[in-house]
Image 1 (cartoon, one colour):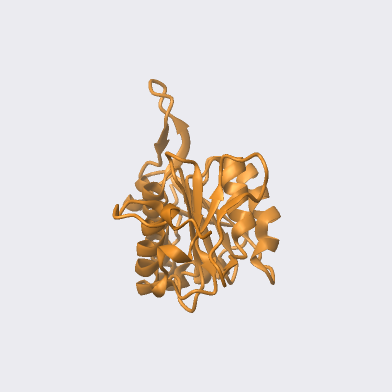
Image 2 (tube, one colour; image 1 turned 90 degrees about the horizontal axis):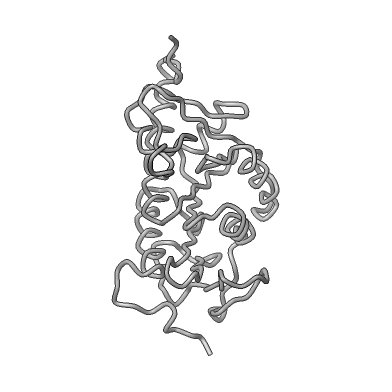
Length: 234
């Protein structure tokens, strides 16, 4: 049984519909071309995780193409839905690691040209400061009254770690986990000559983070071309 009721909904905000609509948007931005990239969303109400499959053109993705993982299960691979004729993304172990160990609500993986180029301009960490858009991204600070994390300030420095690429995406899992442990308040990791992984507590936040980071990466490339340091000196 295909359990289509898990992925068919008239609600545009249903995770299955969001995976498909965002995949189309990201294809149009040239972030997810030639079946590259992937998206995974955890349903806040049910805990079910909706995963884009491997090898499907992102602009043609349908809700019926999605895998559904039981995010509530203590076991690693309990799937409530597996579409016939399709296979899991190579990114699946990375998604599971971020869902289970770092409380991600959604993960976006793209092959953004800005991410690939920026990964070639920096060694271990991408840094940029004094750009208004960094205020859309989380910091390590917490609001003393609410206990909630607060975003970066204009004068802060955004730092995103960079890891080297591997032949297969699942081989990136350990390196990504190491960076997440080293940067517990981060929301992204660049993969050299490959792309970027971005996550957040919800798909709304992950989308905002991803768009903001890509904008900043694009600026950094242009600043590099003009000889302008991406971190402003005091």
